[in-house]
Length: 199
Image (cartoon, rainbow, N blue to C red; front, side, top):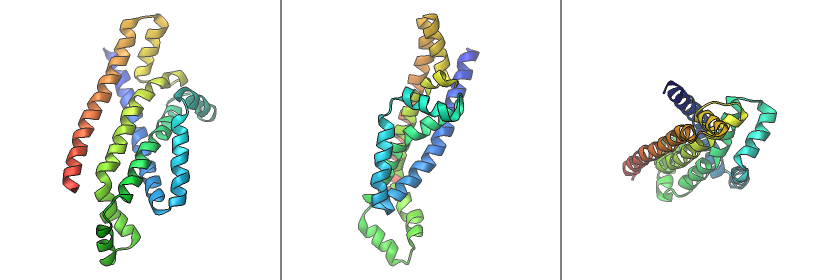
């Protein structure tokens, strides 16, 4: 039980820290894509390419640069999280009512003021939806981290495979599924509340 709790804690810490960094980068790139359409096309295309790379292949490539350990896994999770966050941020900003933007412009707000005081707050529900998708995906991808020397629940699953112990495999796999479902449910509730608040 102690091993399981330690593995769960390690898994959640790696994913949470990675998602915090990924959210900041993804929202910033989403805003850049919104402001500069040509850059947005390139940014989203690159994010789509990264998304198509198999997790094992990406981890292997990053391992050459960052070596074994949690840092490599964190970088991989950050890269994989970019597409849903960037896409949702850009879409949310582009779909804002033009009358609201015109009203903010008429009040003398600068571009940065409109973004921070009007556009981002109104776009939060959809941006949060992108973060939710990225987080749930990251929880499962993080299991692969054991192959490059990272910890978490993947270690228990891997040890179970080595020992051909189905009970041990399930001991590591079931918590991943349960945590992912729990986060999806809770963040879905928050997303609904945010949508009602901004509508």
